[in-house]
Length: 394
Image (cartoon, one colour):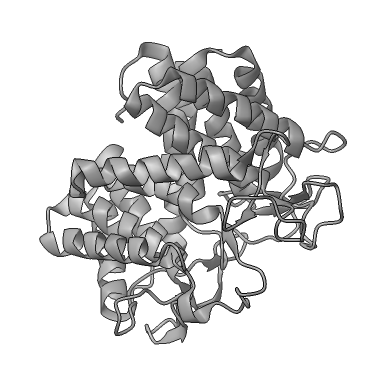
């Protein structure tokens, strides 16, 4: 495989297909921020603004400016999105709402801590691009609020009766593994190390169950398996995404043993989650093989396959394991066969089990300008480094 050609392939697709689609269709030039509910050809079908996707888009354009091309348009777009969110996005406690209407009026309370996680990422990356201290200060204060809330993320918005069944979720420690590396330039070294150690321990020793060979989405407060719908839930995409996060940490630590462990878990996870009949990775599975409660369990999602592709290529880069390379190529072929839309650009987000486009949308409440461009940049970077062992820059 010519990795230099593959790196160029990814960056060309990013710059000539993905970025223009979002620049042409998602910008709200009247109120600020972004429209993410885009039909197949980019037509806006809903104008609500979801905080996850708003901040992710700020992060992505800032990241592209910092790492790919110092195009002033990228920075201008990131700043107008950030300024809209700073003006409208938080409640009186400084917590970030889940969604706003197009004018910026709050629609959904700040029940979800991941709004804060992506806000932290966005303003840290934008500070790196601009040097404006207000962005740095927002990133740091939001991150500290995340740490305050991490043991009870939903707070008063938690609908569960925790006295009866108290479970903790995988998503937050997983995201912290990546988030801390994203904002490392803003934090004291000892705090970075403390949070990284916490996140890696949770991922590798609490939620990964060696006896099952899978990462579960929820455990009880002591880290034990729980025999319930939530306790049996496995999301292979989350597991694979977390493994490339931890590989980055292990590389920072110079811990080859941890890298090898991540590669083995990645291979276990993709074997477990792969649809042997129709190909692709299942969205949800039940660790005991029971019927999952999620009716969408057998759908094939864009982000799952992109994150899996990163995990496999990064695993190959760091260990030269041929199984990783074979899975990487298989995933690349699947994505370009089924998800990529040659007629209107971008990728379909949701496929049936058989690989047909389930919905024509290119963006929505959960799909925005984040996983696809981040994955393309990551894949181009890794492929280029494999080719010549030099950091990629375009």
